[in-house]
Length: 130
Image (cartoon, rainbow, N blue to C red; front, side, top):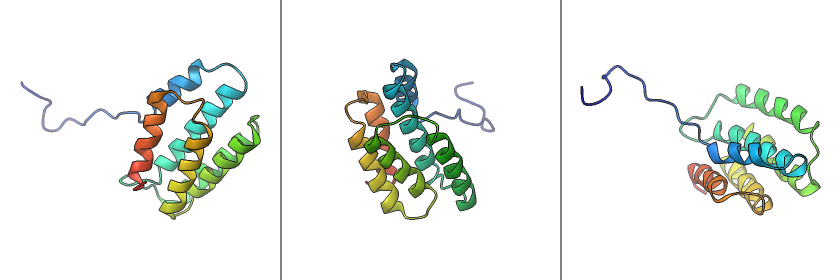
């Protein structure tokens, strides 16, 4: 047999491996919480990006749960504002708002991001046409 059987499913790929690794390796406190918050917000935005585009009620529920979690972590004010805006945008249908919010998060967290994590955020932005 040269390849997978025709009825086999492809293995799913996790789109944010580098971002998750960054969060795992980051120092406790601000850097780790920033990386985790960025990971959460990116995953929410990915759920609103083509070709996935989860149903709006599901995106709203996910955003509400993320807001509750965000209220329990300590983030610098600019990071919190940018991530909250992206979480809120991910619940809506405005692709341009999500793309611009994602760009703001990417810019604000740039100093913390590794090359791989930044690349993952850029690939996500490209899914929105940004």
